[in-house]
Every structure is written in structure tokens, then in C-alpha cells.
Image (cartoon, rainbow, N blue to C red; front, side, top):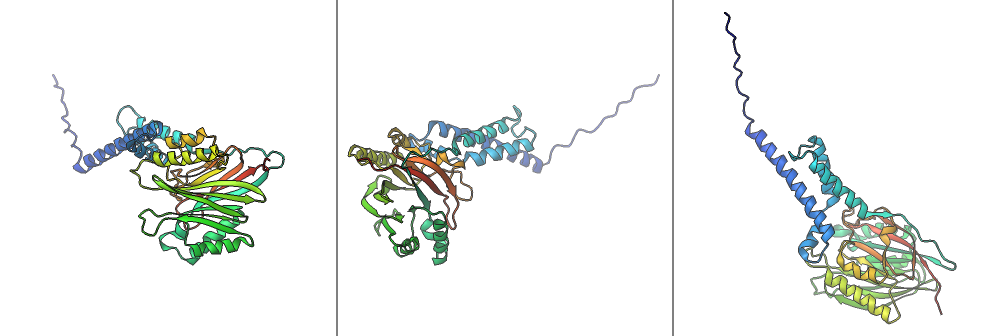
Length: 346
């Protein structure tokens, strides 16, 4: 009788500490991505009634979602062990939500008889070129602004007055500008400028809780346009609601006085989904960026995941088109809005 022989294979060697550490880091990273996506989506739905939820709105969902999707697909759906592809699904949801809320329609409102098209440009020019600004960086910015053929140029974080004078000169005879800026001793820096090829008048300036602004009346080929140009503080832990509430209250007062603002625009430092903008939409203002084709984020210019610069258009005007652009030497994208302005009613 022949006895069966059994082969005793040695047990598999345990994974090395390097492999265990790599697996732990990958799993921790996947869980971190999932947590960020969940928190970001909560922030998008809850919005910003308190500063804590406002911070969740600043989680860059497009980037985090795309990274999560790529990581899980590269791991064949096992970046989080169970269930499979859960991280990819969360990443896809984040990307889909961002696309739905941050892509403009590219729509257009048709002109009415006697409408006049007016081109309004807004850009945060980063003091004329940022930390290393110079006459050359400002010259590049001026050339880019003028190439877009605007009737009205609205600048946030504008450069010094003597540099603005060169832009006014470039626009030709009859051009002028108005501006407001912070006091020299103020820790909050701002400089708002409106430059026009046509007559323009500063009506007043405002200090809001969390920001500043100015009221401007412009005449473009005889058509009146009233602007409220604003700047919001960039402190991320500070609620934007008092600032946006003050902007809406100022707009409401102007409307009750029979002189409503046609445009409310500037660097709000606030995403368009903020609860604070409900006051403007309640007054009939529309976000021009929703008429732009494609992505409407403005900051940072090289990866514009945040929509914090806005042009809100009142009911008296119609929006023919809108486009975002990346100008030289600035960390914000600019915006060019083609508006249809009716004749004055008498």
C-alpha cells in the first residue's frame, strides 16, 4: 500500500511594512477624499447661514471630485474596499453637481426696437499686475482691456490714480473716470474705478459691514445706466451675509426712491450660491454669468473653481451676451457683458 504524500507549502510571507504603510496611506487618502466630497455637497445644499457652513462651500468640488474619480478607477473601484466604486460614484456626483451649477447656458435675450447695445467690462486687475506690477504689466493690461472695445470699464483692486489716467487717455477725447478707495490708515484695502468713453458721475460712496461700494451714473450715447460697484472683504471666516444684506438694502432704497441700479457688480468675494444673493434675485436682478457659455468661475484665474466676481443685471436692461476672459497679470478672470439698454421713458 502506497501512502499519499502531502506537500507542505510554507505560509505566504506577510506584507512588508512599506507595503502596509502604502496601503494605509491610500485608504486614508480615499477616505479623506470621500469626506471632503460629502462635506462640500452638504455646503452646497445648506449654503452659508453660518460661517462654518460657508467654509464648506469653498471646498473645490470640481478638483476633489475629479481626483477621487481618477484614484478609484485606477484602483479598479477598490480605493475604498466596500462597496466597490463608491469613491468613483462620489467623485462623479461632485463633478456633475459642479457642472450643473457652474456652467453658463450661453443664452441671449433679443433686442427690442430702439435698444442700444452697451459693452460693460469688469475685471479685478490685482493693482495693475500683482506683487511685481510695473508700468509694463499695466501697459499689458490696458492693451487687453481696450482690445475688448468696452463702453464702460469697471476695475476692482485698481492701480494708482496716475496709472488710471493713462487708461483714460487711451480711451480718447471725452473719456473720464471716477473712483473710491480706502483711507490710508485702513487695514482693509480697496480701490474701485469706473472708466467710460462717455460722461460719468460719482453719486456717492458706501462703507458696508464687510465691504465697500460706490454709486455711479453713466451716460452711454445718451442712455442712462446706474451702477453700484462693490468690493467684499476676502476674510474666509467672516460671514458674507451682513455685507450682501447691506448691498441688497441699498439697492432696495434706490428702487423705492425711483432711481434703481441697473447693474450691481464687482469682486464680491462670495460664491453665487450664497444666501445673501437671494435679496438681489428677489429684487429682479439676474446673474449675467449664467448667460456665458462654459465655465463661469473667476478665481484663481489658472484654475477658476470659485465664482466670486459677479455682474448682476436689473430688469430694465436685457443681456445680449456674456463672456469670461483671462487677462494678463491677474489672478481673477474678467467678464464682458453686452447689454441692451432701452431709450429713456418720459
